[in-house]
Amino acid sequence: SRRFLRMPFLRPEYAHVRALFKAGLPMAWFGLVGYVFFSSDQLFIKHYLGFAAVGEYAFATRIIYASMILPGIVASVMLPQFARSVGDAGRFRRIFRLGIWAMIGCSLLFAAPTFLVAKFAVGLILPEYNSAVPYIFGLFLSVAPLYILIWLDNVIVVVSRQWQNLLV
Image (cartoon, rainbow, N blue to C red; front, top):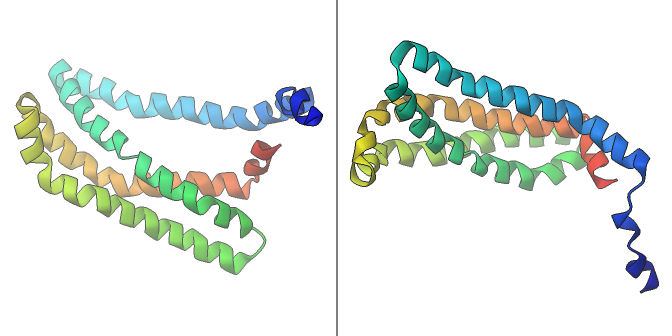
Protein backbone atom coordinates (compact mmCIF):
# COMPACT_ATOMS: atom_id res chain seq x y z
CA SER A 1 0.00 0.00 0.00
CA ARG A 2 2.91 2.39 0.64
CA ARG A 3 4.15 1.88 -2.91
CA PHE A 4 0.75 2.78 -4.28
CA LEU A 5 0.41 5.82 -2.03
CA ARG A 6 3.69 7.26 -3.34
CA MET A 7 2.19 7.11 -6.85
CA PRO A 8 5.39 7.05 -8.92
CA PHE A 9 3.26 6.99 -12.06
CA LEU A 10 2.25 10.60 -11.33
CA ARG A 11 5.91 11.68 -11.55
CA PRO A 12 7.01 10.59 -15.01
CA GLU A 13 10.64 10.80 -15.93
CA TYR A 14 11.59 13.76 -18.08
CA ALA A 15 13.20 11.49 -20.69
CA HIS A 16 9.93 9.57 -21.14
CA VAL A 17 7.88 12.75 -21.45
CA ARG A 18 10.35 14.15 -23.97
CA ALA A 19 10.30 10.89 -25.98
CA LEU A 20 6.50 10.88 -26.03
CA PHE A 21 6.42 14.52 -27.12
CA LYS A 22 9.00 13.85 -29.82
CA ALA A 23 7.05 10.82 -31.08
CA GLY A 24 3.73 12.67 -30.99
CA LEU A 25 4.85 15.93 -32.59
CA PRO A 26 4.67 14.65 -36.20
CA MET A 27 1.19 13.29 -35.55
CA ALA A 28 0.09 16.60 -34.03
CA TRP A 29 1.52 18.45 -37.03
CA PHE A 30 -0.33 16.07 -39.37
CA GLY A 31 -3.55 16.72 -37.44
CA LEU A 32 -3.16 20.46 -37.74
CA VAL A 33 -2.32 20.34 -41.45
CA GLY A 34 -5.21 17.92 -42.00
CA TYR A 35 -7.62 20.28 -40.27
CA VAL A 36 -6.48 23.20 -42.44
CA PHE A 37 -6.62 21.04 -45.57
CA PHE A 38 -10.09 19.69 -44.82
CA SER A 39 -11.37 23.18 -44.00
CA SER A 40 -9.92 24.86 -47.07
CA ASP A 41 -12.71 23.50 -49.26
CA GLN A 42 -15.07 25.93 -47.57
CA LEU A 43 -12.88 28.83 -48.70
CA PHE A 44 -13.19 27.70 -52.30
CA ILE A 45 -16.94 27.27 -52.00
CA LYS A 46 -17.27 30.75 -50.49
CA HIS A 47 -15.18 32.25 -53.27
CA TYR A 48 -17.10 30.60 -56.11
CA LEU A 49 -20.61 30.09 -54.70
CA GLY A 50 -21.03 32.50 -51.76
CA PHE A 51 -21.77 32.32 -48.06
CA ALA A 52 -25.11 30.51 -48.39
CA ALA A 53 -23.43 27.61 -50.17
CA VAL A 54 -20.80 27.43 -47.40
CA GLY A 55 -23.56 27.06 -44.81
CA GLU A 56 -25.24 24.28 -46.77
CA TYR A 57 -21.93 22.53 -47.34
CA ALA A 58 -20.92 22.89 -43.66
CA PHE A 59 -24.20 21.27 -42.61
CA ALA A 60 -23.54 18.34 -44.94
CA THR A 61 -19.94 17.90 -43.78
CA ARG A 62 -21.00 17.76 -40.13
CA ILE A 63 -23.12 14.70 -40.92
CA ILE A 64 -20.14 13.01 -42.57
CA TYR A 65 -17.72 14.04 -39.79
CA ALA A 66 -20.11 12.70 -37.14
CA SER A 67 -19.93 9.29 -38.80
CA MET A 68 -16.15 9.16 -38.33
CA ILE A 69 -16.60 7.74 -34.84
CA LEU A 70 -17.69 4.36 -36.28
CA PRO A 71 -14.43 3.45 -38.07
CA GLY A 72 -12.45 4.77 -35.11
CA ILE A 73 -14.24 2.32 -32.82
CA VAL A 74 -13.72 -0.59 -35.21
CA ALA A 75 -10.04 0.28 -35.68
CA SER A 76 -9.56 0.56 -31.90
CA VAL A 77 -11.06 -2.89 -31.41
CA MET A 78 -8.82 -4.40 -34.11
CA LEU A 79 -5.65 -2.52 -33.13
CA PRO A 80 -4.40 -4.86 -30.35
CA GLN A 81 -4.61 -7.96 -32.58
CA PHE A 82 -3.01 -6.05 -35.42
CA ALA A 83 -0.18 -4.81 -33.19
CA ARG A 84 0.54 -8.38 -32.05
CA SER A 85 0.82 -9.52 -35.67
CA VAL A 86 3.73 -7.23 -36.60
CA GLY A 87 6.26 -10.09 -36.57
CA ASP A 88 4.08 -12.56 -38.50
CA ALA A 89 3.78 -11.42 -42.14
CA GLY A 90 0.90 -13.77 -43.01
CA ARG A 91 -1.19 -12.80 -40.00
CA PHE A 92 -0.31 -9.14 -40.54
CA ARG A 93 -1.62 -9.25 -44.14
CA ARG A 94 -4.77 -11.11 -43.06
CA ILE A 95 -5.63 -8.58 -40.36
CA PHE A 96 -4.70 -5.69 -42.67
CA ARG A 97 -7.13 -6.96 -45.33
CA LEU A 98 -9.77 -7.64 -42.69
CA GLY A 99 -9.41 -4.02 -41.56
CA ILE A 100 -9.86 -2.73 -45.12
CA TRP A 101 -13.01 -4.84 -45.56
CA ALA A 102 -14.28 -3.83 -42.12
CA MET A 103 -13.95 -0.15 -43.09
CA ILE A 104 -15.75 -0.73 -46.39
CA GLY A 105 -18.49 -2.55 -44.47
CA CYS A 106 -18.73 0.28 -41.93
CA SER A 107 -18.97 2.85 -44.70
CA LEU A 108 -21.83 0.92 -46.31
CA LEU A 109 -23.47 0.44 -42.92
CA PHE A 110 -23.47 4.21 -42.43
CA ALA A 111 -23.85 5.51 -45.97
CA ALA A 112 -26.62 3.28 -47.31
CA PRO A 113 -29.31 4.04 -44.70
CA THR A 114 -28.32 7.69 -44.46
CA PHE A 115 -28.35 8.04 -48.23
CA LEU A 116 -31.84 6.53 -48.32
CA VAL A 117 -33.35 8.72 -45.57
CA ALA A 118 -31.29 11.93 -45.82
CA LYS A 119 -33.70 13.85 -48.02
CA PHE A 120 -36.72 12.80 -45.97
CA ALA A 121 -35.03 13.40 -42.58
CA VAL A 122 -33.65 16.82 -43.51
CA GLY A 123 -37.00 17.85 -44.96
CA LEU A 124 -38.83 16.68 -41.85
CA ILE A 125 -36.46 17.94 -39.15
CA LEU A 126 -34.68 20.91 -40.74
CA PRO A 127 -36.55 21.94 -43.88
CA GLU A 128 -34.49 25.13 -44.16
CA TYR A 129 -31.50 22.89 -45.01
CA ASN A 130 -33.17 21.07 -47.91
CA SER A 131 -30.72 22.77 -50.26
CA ALA A 132 -27.88 20.95 -48.44
CA VAL A 133 -29.12 17.50 -49.50
CA PRO A 134 -27.17 17.49 -52.81
CA TYR A 135 -23.99 18.22 -50.82
CA ILE A 136 -24.78 15.30 -48.50
CA PHE A 137 -25.20 12.98 -51.48
CA GLY A 138 -21.95 14.23 -53.03
CA LEU A 139 -20.03 13.81 -49.79
CA PHE A 140 -21.18 10.21 -49.46
CA LEU A 141 -18.72 9.41 -52.22
CA SER A 142 -15.92 10.28 -49.77
CA VAL A 143 -17.09 8.07 -46.89
CA ALA A 144 -15.49 4.76 -47.95
CA PRO A 145 -12.08 6.32 -48.77
CA LEU A 146 -12.12 8.28 -45.50
CA TYR A 147 -12.92 5.16 -43.49
CA ILE A 148 -10.09 3.27 -45.20
CA LEU A 149 -7.73 6.18 -44.41
CA ILE A 150 -8.68 5.92 -40.74
CA TRP A 151 -7.62 2.26 -40.84
CA LEU A 152 -4.38 3.16 -42.65
CA ASP A 153 -3.63 5.74 -39.95
CA ASN A 154 -3.81 2.94 -37.40
CA VAL A 155 -1.59 0.76 -39.59
CA ILE A 156 1.05 3.52 -39.62
CA VAL A 157 0.93 3.73 -35.83
CA VAL A 158 1.39 -0.03 -35.49
CA VAL A 159 4.11 -0.36 -38.10
CA SER A 160 6.13 2.52 -36.71
CA ARG A 161 5.67 1.02 -33.24
CA GLN A 162 4.49 4.31 -31.78
CA TRP A 163 1.90 2.39 -29.81
CA GLN A 164 4.73 1.15 -27.60
CA ASN A 165 5.64 4.71 -26.67
CA LEU A 166 2.13 5.23 -25.36
CA LEU A 167 2.64 2.40 -22.89
CA VAL A 168 5.83 3.89 -21.43
